[in-house]
Amino acid sequence: MWTRKAALLLTSGISLVLIGMMIANFQLMILGLMFIAFLAVNSWVAGHGELEVVRTLSADNLYKGDDLYVELAITNSSFRRTQQLEVFDNVPHEMKLRSGLNYMRVNLGPGETTRIRYVLRCPLRGHYSFGPVSVRYRNTFNLFSQEMYIDHRSGLIVFPQVREIEEAMIRSRTPKMYTGAMTLRTPGPGSEFYSLREYVPGDPFKIINWKAFARTGVMMVNEKCRDAVTDVFILLDSRDISRIGTVLKNPLEMGTVAAASLASYFIQRRDSIALAVYDDTLSYLPADGGDKQYFKVLSSLAGVAPKGDMPLQAVTNSLAPRFSRGSPVFIISSLEGDGTVPHAIRDLAGRGHEVVILSPSSIDYERLVSRIPRMSYEVMKLERQNRLSAVAGYGARVIDWMPDVELSQALLQVKM
Image 1 (cartoon, helix red, strand yellow):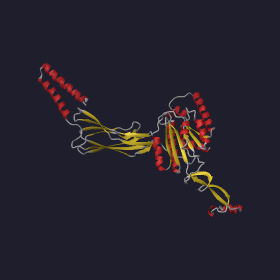
Image 2: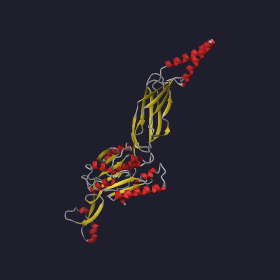
Image 3: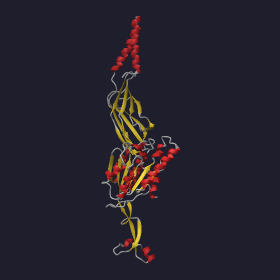
Image 4: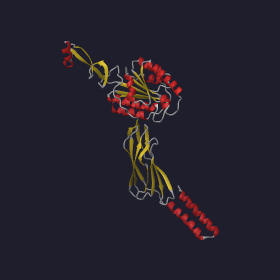
């Protein structure tokens, strides 16, 4: 591709030749021909040599808000100089350059290597791809340029933030076979004190409460709370209505933070987590535990986008055969634009599930991007409170999660 300088040089050469012919001035004609010859010789000069590019990321996955360190190594693998090169590393537009530059001008000799180092801030969760690398060649006199792409790509997953949750909010009514960390309020083998009862022949002597025997004269034994693994089901609403608010603050973003935090908490307690995300379709991750399941949950939440309008009752009906008997169910939804919510909650409560609804207030998120008259806001707020009260009447614990309230503080409402 010709540069502006080359076009100007060619125009000047042709003009000098024509003017020299018109006025019969051989000096001008020779000068114009020299310009054209100089341009022609430069066009025959070969471009850059072969380039090898290697990109190194500080991590393959990280959490929203973390910094990513990137290093791009460019090597001239040919036996001639590259002359003037401009190298630009294409990064996702959602990321912000914190320090350094993803652009460099270089002139590499045979076998020579240079490196570009820069730091990116990752403010949004998601699945991202780096690359390709854009290269622009300019010859020595900047007369011709050539653009090309080196198809070198790197993948990155940005997980939603995980907030710390201090203690359990929910217990399963039905224990599972293997011992775990979830405490059930039923007597059985465990570590937490439950109650005292009278001694029955056959009870082991190590559970006798000798202090109670000395005080009452009756042989008493300690009962413990049974520990068991629980299946916890998390249903995340990612319908199109969940995009209300800003890019960083909306019901869906806060919902992914809540789902990730709950999954982290229960998996650390050695419970099993199942995740269902519903938008225009239903995505389901079967219940499992351990670090592998934890990263599956985070990876699934990283790719969630608002779309569709699937009702909650369709979700609960589809998952009904998969729900473990008596397992707790977390529903993270603003509950807007879905008239099937009361019926779905009634069905879950009727089957013996303990239902907790964590509902980000979409009205307050809407106020972040648009001005709502005070009277209209109060009316919508009252309608929302009536809706939440009606849902609570069907047997669910409902949490009205405001934008300025931390997740751990909001979850304390469950205990109340």
